[in-house]
Length: 146
Length: 123
Length: 275
Image (cartoon, rainbow over all chains, first blue to last red; front, side):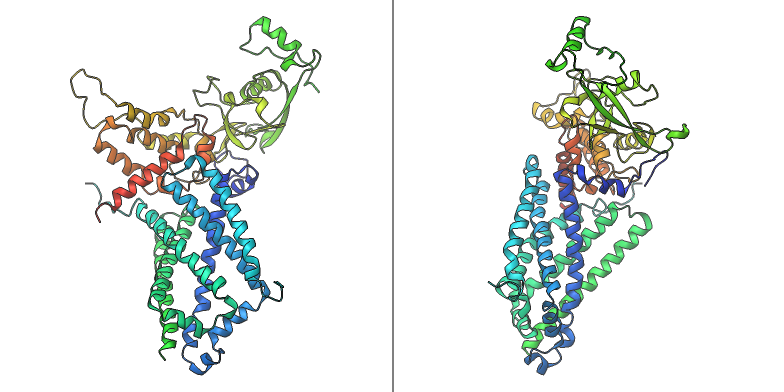
């Protein structure tokens, strides 16, 4: 990405190397992109896991015993602590993307552009609050005594 | 003399649909998270349980709407991220169609899953 | 530490009597103290062996009240290193020549007070554009984008009567007022990661310039339609990701993002209309 005579390392590095000088709008953009990639990646992984329902549906005895491929796959995954922790991360990503998404919808409608930076701070606060509240729900009882 | 311009050329329709799907997703995704993590717990998911949910028409339709809007929103989002990274010309055109195909495949697969689940109840 | 001991150059705007007072008590301090500020300025010169890779050079500049970044740079050049190169002209915020990257933000040198900046002050050329020398960047890409939006008044029809003026309502003038203030400094386009120099995105300055005429009622509907088409093509307004950096750095306080958003909405309404 360097043009003639350029001697900085301009380009992608320059963009993200300057993170210390990012404004609210810039942070919102970066985080919206990052959470977007995470959610998109999850969507396809999720469809893959759910696809086990198709072969699983052909075995009524297994289904009755909750031992079919779909049930075993999902409960197996849910049994892994790391997966539970990642789910909390997924929740945080989703909440931020949704709340900041609302901020972006308002911007697109021309509402409250003067307060767009505050809107970003609200997104962060809501994300943190919802994530904290959800931790006991997401983590298994062995880890969370209450 | 002017070459025929498609209304899609500016990207305004894709932009608009991204916002429309965003609004829809705000509701369905929130519902999905609440229903499947707070009301029901993910660790307790079974095929039978999923089947009972999917057998209800309103839920089924809701999930299909969720599927279509989510796939569009996600793929359109990634496509735009690639454009901003400099995707252009022939690569851009090819990518567009690749994404379109991936989208259709994902939606078809999702609907197959939904039918498979609902079908368990009527077996 | 007060620089190299040279007598500070007189501030160009102060009459002789004020000058003495300033030397005696700059900023109201004691008579013997001379406050200085540390500038870290980016240096690069492809024609000089030692300067072929970019680096930062430090200057200690004596401060006087009301001193701007441009004043400090001129002092550095005039008193310390005459090879220090940067663009400047009017020094009053209307020519748009002296946009720099100061302490991590795009600012006009002549409109930025030394006193409001944290020290040491880091001055770099505008990001996302190739550096020609020191603080001078290649602006051709920027000018090309500006020209691409046909930035001149271009009405559908001649004025109503033969020698009559073309009238504009007060409301319409208010609508376009802020968009007319652009001084082509390039700060906004430099601040936008989508408009980095290799990209073809029009950028906030060019779009705003197009908006200025698009929104002007005096041009007429046909011209307005053509302009909207130009501004909403492939790498037009829909590449904007509402980072808001442009709005933040514009030295003329033009609500750039707002104007871009208006164009997005208008284009969407236009394209959805036939359904």
